[in-house]
Length: 99
Image (cartoon, rainbow, N blue to C red; front, side, top):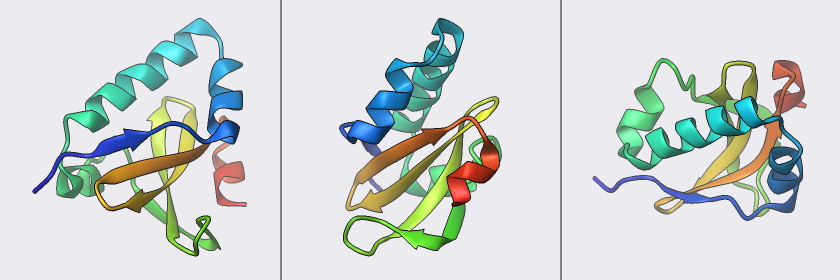
């Protein structure tokens, strides 16, 4: 099985990430480093990441999107595209990740 590759190029993700305070930025980086070390099945099952399908939306080409814990009080919205995890956005409010 292949390791997860990251795509962090979405402007909405970058806008939020670049506005975070230093401790939050470091927490996001730590999680992203962890994700890069995982294979896809490990990502799906990791209890700290809490990978969850978002049924109320879809990705740019209709893909299923997911929410995962990216920091203590922050979730990311992302989708799988081959070996890439394409992160769309960050959300400090858990509920906003689902709307």
